[in-house]
Image (cartoon, rainbow, N blue to C red; front, side, top):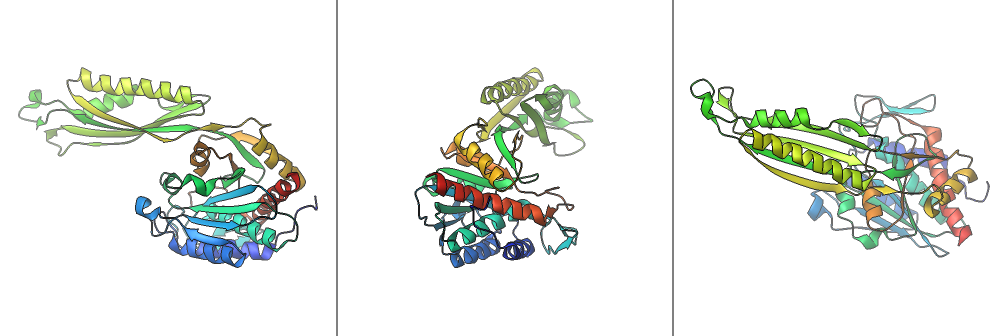
Length: 377
């Protein structure tokens, strides 16, 4: 306690509220990125944008900002610039210390809490006379639609000793120590179209194949580490036509990579069998969306964050998540990526909220991690 520089709570809150008011759905992040870039330049960072827009289709690239340190070591602070719809016309209000949206929109705390905390952390460390590691801010685009910005990052951009990914739900102090490997599929069934009233015997229904597969596929929580789901189904051309085509999309996930692959194999076999047994065909495409990761509670980066929690009086807690984040992509690049709870609640819904005190505690934690890295060098 007392060994890390204090944050400016008023400045932090003002930054967060301004970002919340800024329209930034996936693919249209430029206005939010410009505000972040201005704030980081004012703090003394060298700021640039990468060329990922050519890949992602966003109206801006990923934002990369660097504040040179006074001691060895690099701390990467990662958050994402986009938020889910509805996010147009957000007007945040504060009642009893809780920030919500006054209208029928999301608040955007996911992930403007992370952006604000990272910006304030950099500003605090830049203004302090105390030692600091090099700080990198990596603010990504299109996280909400498949981690696209992170997937387009040059690995050198996120190189560092540890990366804090500020993008998990729950009160500050939450430390994600495991996240799943996520594998998706698209199955295109082909049957034989025929008139449903005149010659149904000549038809082979692709919809029936898809339905048979859905009934046989594992669904929901498969075991303590794994889940599976069919997300969409479509097909056919008209009510009076035996459907000649149908499409399924779905996924499987597991904290255990071997289990994820085994679940994929089971699902693959079921889908192919459903087509074959009906006399049809299926084209099946599997995609590994991102790799999972697992940390031991005593592992260096996790221990660093745990100790920093203690420094600022936040009870640390470890948990596994069934969701993915930029941490999955960054960890796969060989950078220890620790996703942290940011205080946001009810994300992706119009009841989303964030306590002002949690925003402050998250930021204090980031500053404490940076200060501890400098002390431990």
